Amino acid sequence: MEEYSRGKVLKSVKGSILVLMNAIAICGNIFVCWAIYRKRKTFSVLYLYILALAISDLTVAITCFPFCIEAFLADRWLHGHAMCQFIGFTIYYWAGISVPTLALTAVNRYFRVVKTHIYQNFFTIKSSVKMILTVWALTLFDGLISTFVGPVIYKYNPRYFFCIGTFVSKAHERAIGLSLHLIHVFIPLLTILFCYSNVFFAIRRHKTNVMPSLHAGNGQQLAVNAWEMRVTRLLFLVVVGFLLCWIPVIIIGLLAHSSSLKLPDSAYELYTFFAFASAVINPIIYGVANRGFRREFIGIFRCS
Image (cartoon, rainbow, N blue to C red; front, side, top):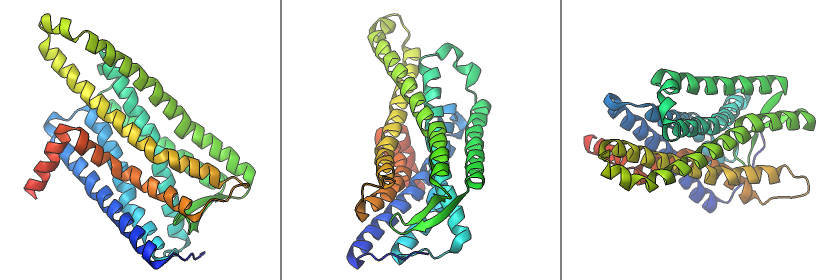
């Protein structure tokens, strides 16, 4: 395993930030899961998608991030080849299910706001569980096929301070990389863009018709719609937060593979810091932007 030396002061500061981020990711996503559990009597399809995102972030925060932080502080990988394969694959799998899960959430919002009359035909608790598990299973299948067919060998890279996938040839790397990015990144992102653009057009039309509907005596229905609109904006903020974290990761990753450009070591560290942040940001968004989650978080603190 390659060793890499960092200055003690900077390493202590950055290591403290990483430990804090990991603690927030674990505690924050546990709070989200517990808050949804407290709402189990009024559990809806919407909470199921939020729960899926929280579980995926919590899993990687528990199983992967501590090993990466340990390697960062020790300036080397301490857990052997087999663990490196597991941690490397798990990190890429987590990244691979995040965008498709967000795309499913966007599709749910599209049907709930734009195609309300057929929403119940497609989105029940049972059908939504099947959709989420299908996406996770297909991503796992793609990852395993790519790993063994590639083959992909995960090797510790001290500049990123986690195990990076390596390929036997550039041809394999391009073929597998392009296919996985197409299936798990570009198509889901186009789906998100399509769904939320239509949702916001529907919200604008809704605002235009609010006053006539109030005069018509449809206050109860409008209250439901207003709640749906607030939740839709919340989930859109989750997408924006995700993109703010992952666009720098994608840019740094593309530049790092360019043979004509040498990046400073800090760029590789930023790559991992931004990836870490994507598991931290969702609980913060829920707590700041949603009154219901904020009340549940306060209730959890009071109970404890």
